[in-house]
Length: 127
Image 1 (cartoon, rainbow, N blue to C red):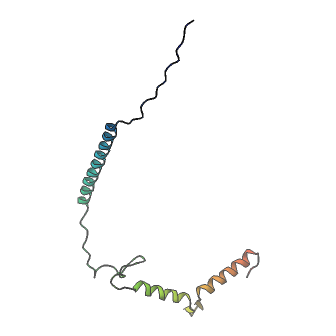
Image 2 (cartoon, rainbow, N blue to C red):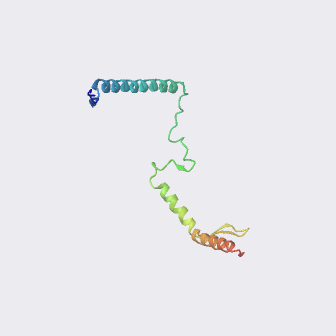
């Protein structure tokens, strides 16, 4: 009768080679530095090809571009005053066109009339 030995099982060491980690970090750092240098060079070349920006003096600058007021810094409170005037206009009655009998009504009243009209039409009743 022969004796069979069971196979020996061994586990590998749980060690990561420090050289591999350092080598990977150095390569990553070099790639990042190279990317920054290349992108800086490309940006500089593209910027050099652009025409020179026109010089605009503050007096020649437009007062407003679209809905953005450009004078807020030189005249503090300008935008706030305009907003107050517009909000006051939303809350008062006024003639828009007296010849055609068109009036402006306060926004709260206009909303309630709109809701009443559409609530009645949703119920199948015409106002």
